[in-house]
Every structure is written in structure tokens, then in C-alpha cells.
Length: 104
Length: 104
DNA sequence: TTCAGTACCTTGTGTTGCAAGGTATTCTAA
DNA sequence: TTAGAATACCTTGCAACACAAGGTACTGAA
Image (tube, rainbow over all chains, first blue to last red; front, side, top):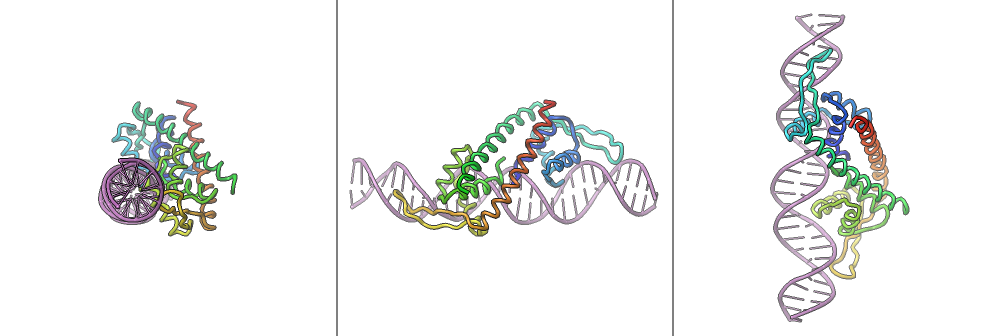
């Protein structure tokens, strides 16, 4: 169901501040969007390749270093397109829901 | 972006009344959800195989006969699951959007 | 020095959506 | 009467996405 929306979610989260993969996964979990590591890592790498994200390494208080991702200017442009797409989609669905609930 | 949501849209539309493929595509277009024939036909066939839909042939006033799809009891059960999933997803996204717009 | 915890990443698979191409029926106009 | 145009159905092959499963590596504590 949530296919394709993950890119949007990740850009949204990173537009509020830099995060590393595990913390992104955690933040998504908090709003009941469950995403697997095997989905997240390839996606982040893809978004980096597309120039929507960058990253820097940072020491962790405990454990191995973390790869903090940050959104680029291009990423922000892409994000506003996805904002519009999301609104269109959710309005579309809401409108169908209203029409169908009349006769349910 | 709209991946996986099409099944939900189609079940929603059919829960309001029987439709044939072209009219479903048309209705989705009206709410700016553009879907290709090559997506719709296989999906309808798949939902039929899963027992969520049935169909009957009906004469058309003009042109070849139409395959009217109708939702089954099982389809309605599936639909209420998707209703819940959609709400969870859109609430999740909205909540991330709120958090990120603060710092944008 | 081994184990638990954290963090990274890859591979292979199934599903989804699409573009392109194809068949068949009906009606209309030449 | 036959050649389009319009409508409606469907299939094939491809690319992208999400996930499960499996794997590496660093750190600190027992």
C-alpha cells in the first residue's frame, strides 16, 4: 500500500534535519510506517546518486560511526514536487471515499 | 508514488456500484489519478482471481459488450482493511509533514 | 576474548505499473 | 458494402520498488 511513498517520507524527515539510516527507520516506525532495512539502505543510496541527498560520517557515542544524510537543494525541489503529488493523490482518494460512502 | 493504492481505489469505486474497466479508468482520471489500461486490466483480473471481484457481461448501447465488475463480500472485507491502512498511512505522512514544516 | 548492541550493506525474489502492441465489435459515412 | 472511427477488451516485456534473509564491522562490557 505504501509503495512509492517512502521516498517522500524520507525527504520530508531530512528536510527537518540530518539523520542516519537507523534513526530514519525509527522515526517512521513512530508514525506506524514500518520499513525494512533492506528497503531503506538501497533507497538512500539511490537518492544520493540522484543528487537529492548527501551524507557525512559522524562518530557515535556508542557503536560504529553513523552516516548522517542531509537533503540537498535539488532534494528540496524534488520534495516540493512530491508534496504536490501527495496532495493530489490524497485528495483524489478522499474524493472517491466520499462518493462511495454515500452508497455503502 | 501511487503504487499499491490503485487496488484500494478500484475497490472503493466498485463498492459504490458496478463499473466496467473503461469507466473505472475514467472515474479515476476525474480525480487526477491517471492509470493506464495496461495496469487496470491485469489488476482487475488479479482481483477477480483473488475472489474480491466478480463480473458479468452486459450489452453496450454502442460498441462491443462491457465487462461489468462488482465487488464481492470478500472484497468488502478486504476493502475495510485497506481503509484502515490508508488512514494509517495518510495520518503517518501528515504527522511527518507537520513536524518537518516547523523547521522548513 | 567473547558476546551483545549498533550500524552499515548486498542479493535474490515477488509485485506493481506502464508503454506498446494487438483483437474484436458496432456504427456511420462514403 | 466496405472502410474508418470509436469503443472495449487483453497481452507481453520491462523497470522500479519493497522486503526477507544473510552478511560485515565497530564498540563496550562481562
